[in-house]
Image (tube, rainbow, N blue to C red; front, side, top):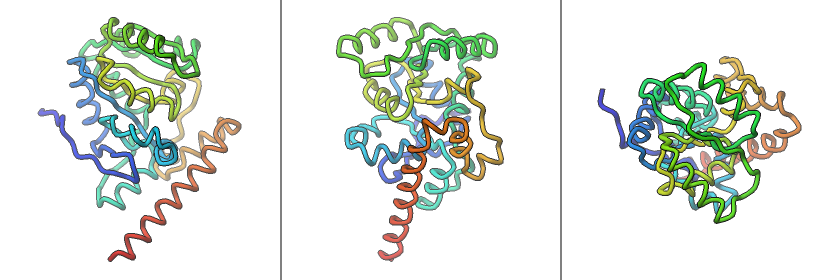
Length: 257
């Protein structure tokens, strides 16, 4: 089967989204990874989209990330509405991560884990070892939970490239992970995936929402119930802003006709 390495991207306010299905997106990623091409990937939900609009620094660099997939049913609905697409379902970071690991397992590729805590990294490593024995974790880097100095960043890049990693899974939380991937396109010789909570899900620290909850675009609520203290402000303000942005864009579109 021929792999599509060039794919259309659809702008939604600022980020340009890839509309490929999950399995096809994963095949593109694996083609880049197997050749150790520097390639940026992000699973961007409403929060990340709104951050790219509000944060001019992130906004200027977000589309350095070559493949941005819609992680969130509201993002899918907006893409379908504004671009007359027929995207069937979102591509959550945890789902894309497993699809990529499945293909990496078949090709016996190397993976580097960047971000999160020591405990989560160990649990995630254990999950990969038991479920994807063909994948070799060639390095892990616990998050500093701050920006790296220039010297630290240079050392990180050297270490990742020297490890022989084909794939770097980045779990630093949004928007820090999107900044990191965008800043390292062309510097890290791997496919870099900003997949956020995938580390915690596959380490067994978070539980995924039931499929019916996801289909109704309510996974954010399921996560809020699990982590109210950390997430209530994010979801309250970003979800409301996203709704306002969509309504304003729809009104402007109607008035221009």
